[in-house]
Structure formats: C-alpha cells, structure tokens
Image (cartoon, rainbow, N blue to C red; front, side, top):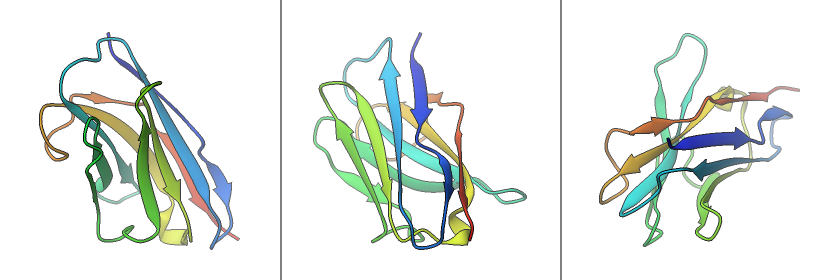
Amino acid sequence: QLQLVESGGGLVQPGGSLRLSCAASGSIFGVYSMGWYRQAPGKEREFVAAISWSGGSTYSGDSVRGRFTISRDTTKTILYLQMNTLKPEDTAVYYCYYRRGVGTRGTPDYWGQGTQVTVSS
C-alpha cells in the first residue's frame, strides 16, 4: 500500500552535484524515518543517511559525511539527498526506504526501486 518513487539519478562529473528525491504515498502514519542505502556493482549494500521525520534528526555514513545532506519536505512527504563533491566511488544504485518506529536506525520496512548514480569524467 505504501509506495516510494525515486527520481534525480543520472550521470555527473567528479566534483559535481546531484539531488535525489523519493516521494512516499499510501499508508503513512505515526512515527517513522526515511533514508538511503546504496549498492555498487560487486559491493555490499552500504548505509548512506537517514532522517527522523517528525524531529528531523539525521544520521549519515562515514564515507558521505560532509558531502551529502539528507532532508525532508513534511508537507508533501518527500525525501531528498543532496550530493555534493561527488567522487567516482559514489557510483552506485541508490535506494530510498521507509522505516516504522522511533529513531533513524533499524531495518527498513519499504524500499524504492532504486536510481542509478554514475560519477565519471
């Protein structure tokens, strides 16, 4: 019943920027968080960032801290990931998620289909 629709992926040069969006619709209620994982070819899935929806508390992975910023639009229930100073190693499929409950950590309950981000000159 809950759907996550992603957009904003694409090809960008090293040092450039992209902004990913993930719009949630359906059975949205109570306390929850949203966030992003990514997975590069042949690599393990990696946590990127998360945000608590009501309070706006954020948590991010070490590899992206200081370069990526997670944010939310509480009116439209849209999740954003602003990615700056992109590096080739940021190339991956980025997946947004929705997680029920308190806090910003834990196992997601719903996943988006993913959007490809390619950083190359």
